[in-house]
Figure 1 (cartoon, rainbow, N blue to C red):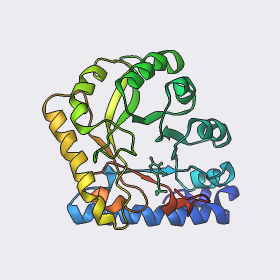
Figure 2 (spheres, helix red, strand yellow):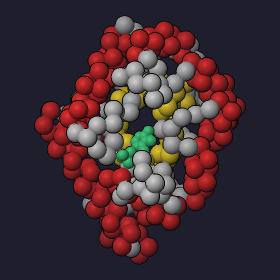
Figure 3 (tube, rainbow, N blue to C red):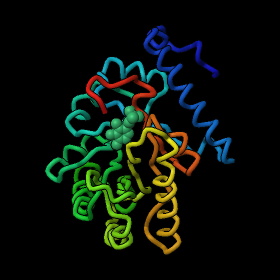
Figure 4 (cartoon, rainbow, N blue to C red):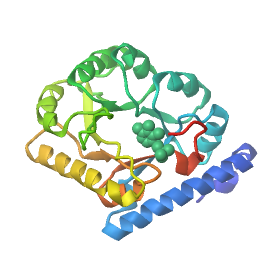
Length: 249
Ligand SMILES: *Cc1c(COP(=O)(O)O)cnc(C)c1O
């Protein structure tokens, strides 16, 4: 890449270099998955899920080009965002209504909207906290519990059309798409039906005129290639970039 040699010394420490390698490997796997199904890799955004990773390492990750980071807890975002300049941040974990204001203060998008009430609250507070409005909408994704798994958050697929009618009227929000967490499976291939179902759901809703853009956030370290083959436009990857987490998933 042009200009790489001109970066300051601090940008080529062993930490930065190892993240460059990890990022390139994940991007190459995304590109290969795109190739298999005739998609362009430009259609897929890599989000680095940085939960449990400390700010010092995250600064290296950002210097290596991992500039979109995601956390699954509001308080972790609050702690890290000021320590890691140059990144944008998304929330991918559950959001309680009493933390919406704090979430809006640190996250540039929220992927885990799972009720109309939560969307209404974000719409209201985004105007106040982020100056959002019809000309400057705050980006959200709606989380869908595709498999109706009782242990998972998200809208039931059947409830989405009605929810979108209500959320479509919230004009400080930009509903960029749908997000799902694949089933916990030992084989990536077993997650394919979940991802395919999210894509079909999105197409069906948009064909009927729902106020919904086309993003599909699906795929994590163990199954992002399958997700890309099934149409993911956003993959949320943690361990394949940062290594195993200290305390399980
Ligand atoms: C932790 C997490 C990820 C990343 O998981 P990995 O298996 O580490 O890639 C993605 N999405 C959500 C919602 C998460 O909580």
